[in-house]
Image 1 (cartoon, rainbow, N blue to C red):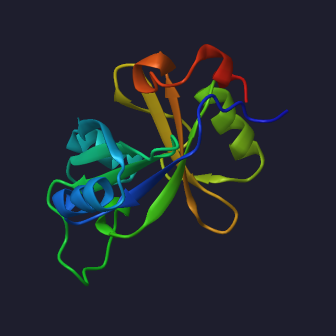
Image 2: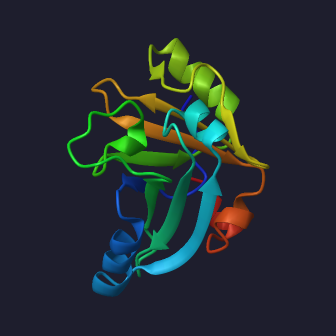
Length: 163
């Protein structure tokens, strides 16, 4: 049995200066602004991303790929050692939007995958569950389930969801 993904892969990029990074990706590379979300400190800690809250900006290429730029409310100074993922600007992770996050977590745990967020998903906001884990070589992966995927990816047609 394979994990059922219901939307294209996304890449998250940690950054110190969200405004500068957004300007680069929008103005220089021609990405389109899709949306912005603010995540509270309690949720950020549960996800293992930041000791404080953070902001995420979603951008899309002309071909439909998406990136997420993420920055802690108080980014660390350059050269600071980090405890949380968002304290490491330049770090990247892959996002897999899945059909059933609980079953996906159980399957990955059974195969020996280590979860940063523990054995349960974390509610990021109403209708959105997420979990972070590491692949066998230590790369960070995010699993996300949306109660209503169309509220997140209006550009996807129903037929496109059968990967």
